[in-house]
Image (cartoon, rainbow, N blue to C red):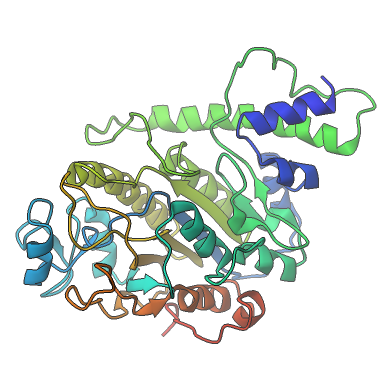
Length: 405
């Protein structure tokens, strides 16, 4: 198999992006990542950041529910939750009933809920808004992600920023370096690909690395299958098709986070991980579908946070936008603006943060954001990754610190 054919296969299969593969940044294996545990280069007590992207625009109002606000019930009478349905956080705010694990973490001080997170002049396009969130530049289309720029400042070793997604997200693309993609949903046994993972005598280093990558993907899928088979059957889990918008989310979120946990427990050098779940573009019959998706998030993230208890590991969960305040005629919601960001882990300032946006003082039917998303990023960069957020965020000076006292 020549290199061109191998590259075409990897790109066509969604394993890696063409540009990233050309740079060689994503052709790393899980073994490469685990090998970093033996280097001893990781600073003692260094923090680890795990970013969970929910593709499709999760409905924030039905996730963190302002159940006591009559305007909420009026705006979406057929899909709103009442006081008896939500998992209460206080006298006015509750969580979606699917987030039972998140409620427990909230009571234990291991969940911070940041409300009203957004950016100026919001864009309701999935792709443009996700580009804004991943580049942290709401003004112009960017070519680098905010964690990719952090990677540039941290020396550029791709193994410091790892994605367990089908393709390297823009989030991890820097100006001079890019993170490593180690996907979990390789198309095993595809026609004509036998031998892709076998080394060939005299092949160039990049070609050899691609071969090792493919072989490793095969072993990863076996690992994922083993993890999945070991889990008890959950009658509430959705094992059906995943109608994700854009990219991300085909692999089971719990399996992605299981790999992250194994890497953390091994003591790898990786400081930032990216995982994702798709399918949140709920324009019709939203209530049941969103509960199924949120139950997947709750189960996967709660188990991960419990497993990482006592370690300096912080999880941030976000989506590209929330939904409009008023429900549409199909018992769903359309693309909106500000939403919530969840930050989870040990050593957090848990609780509710940020001001809940008004449901009556709207911007063309949309929520007005109260927290700039770059404030959240700045806190994660400074407090988890111990870097200067202004250097990564183009001089941005705001900061919301959610860790420490």
